[in-house]
Length: 120
Length: 174
Image (tube, rainbow over all chains, first blue to last red; front, top):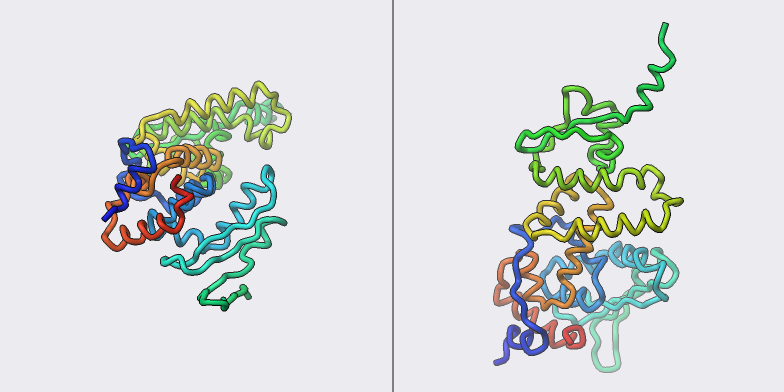
């Protein structure tokens, strides 16, 4: 069975990795790092740990990411899956400013039916 | 009669404060530079850290503190100008050059710096080190990210989650 390491090896150059930290970084600093990553790295990061996953569920992450982005980038929709099994999708709007945040979450996609949850 | 220059003297000469590292080294530095730290700012505004007192920093060793202060001293003038709206392009380029050079350091030093920037709440330095870490992570696989950030190797359950994620989001791994 092809495990994760093999897949990683085939897709990416392997490098020798020196650990940055003897311990895990403080949460606020991890968020600061997150905010400066491109989307591919953010997605990979989400696979790294539960913390990464949790970060995405916090609406202020989306809001802060928008703030960080707003000067230079066109409006975006930000899709993320709020469950560990990746069977739901949350959509964040990032078009008009930090206020718009979470738009809706799609759940339980089954045949023609989908449950759509809106905040509030 | 009070000499008029006594008031000027207080304002004219830059006020100094003393910071004491965890290994008891004393650093004398301009209050304006030390005030880049949100943590220290209030103490300094209240008049602390002057004279023989000194502000103890039990979480920061002398090697790290001297590095942190190097950053603060360099950035203090721009910060005092409210982000230096009238700074010349040359000044800004010089600060950028300094910043790039500043984080071109050994990983263990970087880690101490991250912790100090966090503890002392020095906003610019927090951004700088976060950007450095982000640059280190870009293009790495989840496994490499884990190792870079010092996470323990994944449990079988976490490994399964990582595999599932990788199948789901193949494009993120190209």
